[in-house]
Amino acid sequence: TVALSTCEAEYMALTEAIKEAIYLYNSYNYIRINLGFSDLNKPRILIDNKAAQKLAENLEFIKKLSI
Image 1 (tube, rainbow, N blue to C red):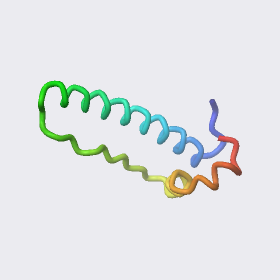
Image 2: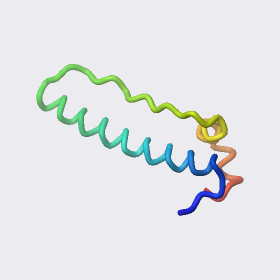
Image 3: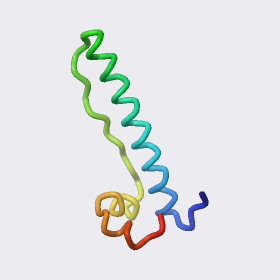
Image 4: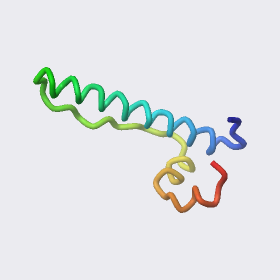
């Protein structure tokens, strides 16, 4: 998929990062439970594009876009 704006490109990258973070968190959590390790901190994902951040925070905007 080709992004038509930097906001769209950053948002697409953000969604991929979130997918990977969820997968890794769930994998580590499964291992932690089975091996008895201490609790995990939830991952934090940082973003440097304000427009993409606002888009991710407010899903009303996504309905108006073709993302």
